Length: 489
Image 1 (cartoon, one colour):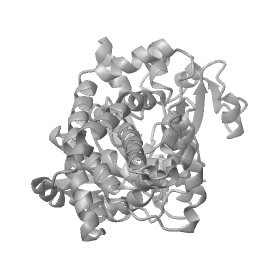
Image 2 (cartoon, helix red, strand yellow):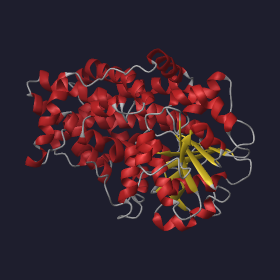
Image 3 (cartoon, helix red, strand yellow):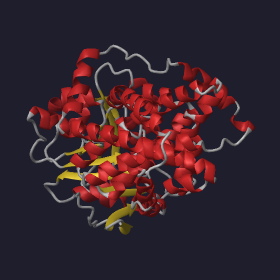
Image 4 (tube, helix red, strand yellow):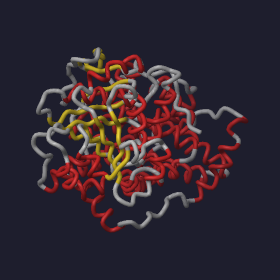
């Protein structure tokens, strides 16, 4: 089990009650910004390497939060990068030294935050490490590089701190909620942090300062290894891959039962991203079932108990393949095979043509929760929760990677656009994983779970759900949730 206790010489910490004990957490907010100079003591320049969704969001948030502190935030990009124009438009320029060649920015920075694509990081980390100035701290936003170094027999360079701050949401969410935080203090995306190497004893406060500067409403401790496993598994399961498999299978089931295209979409994709996600976000997992009448509750129960087993089998398989490096190797192989070629898009199945019509009529009525869809979706979430708990992840990590990141960051974006759009516009690592595992979930639901819903619900599984400690963990985390939902244009 990952230790969740830590101390800070800079920030006031809190103790959060979780099942079986407590966790130390940092409650964020803009009232902590005056403490940032102490947290970043010894750092005069932060180099953000990369301008993808996370790179852009983090560079902008750090720059805004550290304005007037004497800490400069610079963006480093590869020669010929197509992102130069956008970085300039955002106010980073060569003239004032806040935009430049990635190796030059690395060489002149005290904290180097590596936010380039995973495949590029795997290919070029040696050059980046070689350019580091003595004593510079390496910053990461997930543990992919750790997994790659283990697979290749490499390691982080000696004498350098290695920390991670990992926002539990996509880059656009990190930026949008930060901006909303100007009106509602604390609005932002939760983050985990990890200290992998700390040669001078200042890494924890530096990581906490980074998280506060990003706008994280609460920050919890993990390890780089634990974060890597939960993040990569989560992308392939509840956060992305499983969602795609669920809505495709449910849409097909509805159409086979005689529903028209719009109704089938509303009962599948629209239900997951809309009323189900909102209910979980505001009231928790149990509330979805509790708000159903007796007839609909029986439908939920049958769907839940039929889907839990097949979903748990797949998430366990994903976890094993992430843990032993198989999933990482598949990503690297795919990147080599694809090169610079664009990936094909997944939104070609018939259901996605109905999305625009469904979104156009949202104002006409309040869509009710579909009990069958809710049972399947929540069973899949609970399968991931149980797998993470069995593997020893801390509760903050479990609920953020399995539930909160989904309902407070990703599903609102899917609701504004659609699930297929989200899959096709996420990172290559996540996209490859969703394309690999989404069809596995779809087949398991169609071939195993849905036929089993003809049988009575498994009362033991329902009792386990009703009394599950995850509900207490979510309640504790909800106390740190800012009173604002993400605004998605």
